Length: 593
Image 1 (spheres, one colour):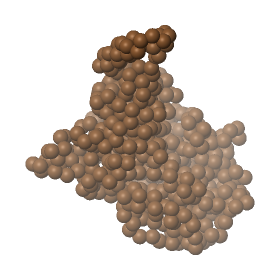
Image 2: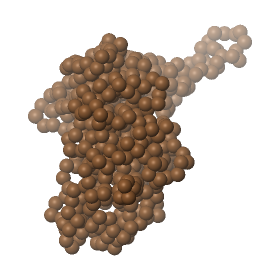
Image 3: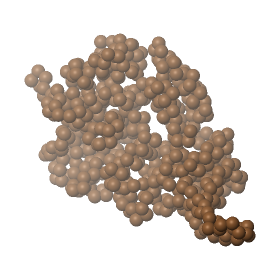
Image 4: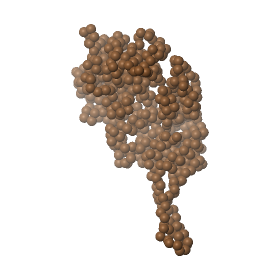
């Protein structure tokens, strides 16, 4: 056990985690040099250049004729996937904190670092990309010393591209990261930190052994679900899965036990033996709470069951996704899904399309609200159509976040204007170094779920970084805004919005829908309403056939008769005609500008 090291890599998005992980794998001869970002094995990850899933891999490294086993977990950097990071941190004793030499410390670096410090991990600071012409390693070193309070000489300099400083990192991992603690003779306790679905072998769970030893053929029990299984195969994770006869305390491995349904494996659960069972599960693991909710509906209604199966399989691989069935008058049967943020929602939609070949419509995302009625009862509402009658509502509480924005001092003005426009409350601003400032805001989560992140990036030319955590619920003046087509409300387009923004939002929504809804044989009235009060209206004009074209001259009454006849037809058509809302219209609401 003294020669095992478990560590993860934490950093802000795009600071070179996966490239550096490649170099570590290459220098420990775990892989041959063949292609970049070995651990990012999803097409989506390669295309977007981001890590979406945590990946575990085992390396062997010999130093002074002594063999060490290094278990590396590469983690995502985007704020939406901080849950993946928290699970990886729970399975490690040390962390490489990677900072880009050209960009310096950013918001996600700080929040992931605090998470690691809370779990008592040993932090090894590394400045990456020192080969870049725009690198400023000395300034970044100052920032790290200020943040961590460490010694200057303990900061390593490396380049994932050229491989410079990689051996120093490997040696630092062996010298600084403590070996795992645990008792090999105690009852078995393994922490599950990830799971994947394999269509031939069922569900494969990845775990770290905290105490005891697990062997092939053991009868094991999952504590949270109480289910018992036979361990058909246990092994370690190299690039492929390598079977072993036993996995000992402190090591990381996988277990295959023929589990068929996704509900039986929970990330964060503890595995123990059936006979000599552990008294309690491993603590310190929290259930994730989704923050953004949206309806996901199959385009073809017969795909409903396929969508359910696909979401269950996705949930295995991505424990932060939650869903429950719901139905909508406009879209039929579907699911109300909970996501950690907008990028997470986009990725889930892409993965449904690519991995399961299912086309879905996603409704406008919204957050969960607490609604208090006049009797003092509180209900949680995830969907505006689930809101009780306005006459019965005492007040509505909305979730607030504590946001921190790190930016160059040149962009403070526009960023403050943006945050105040989103009803943000400025708390404080701190200068991290000469020209970098961190601004703290309390903001309603509902205001940032739609397009805040995109706007922040564009006004700061990509330099501002943003991180947030949920603070509390506070009362807000919120109203439900309905969109009516020919007097019929379209439930999938209704939103909860603040009173002050409601009129302009309703107006912009009507104008946008007018462009997107195709013309019919009859006039379509698009209205935005709060309760029974109409606040905006647009009309999509009818496509009209010229019925009088065949009348050459003659009496005006002949033309009038034909026009009246046409008018009657249009009126009849309007009574039975339905308006199809194209998929673009649901997405356009997200980008109302």
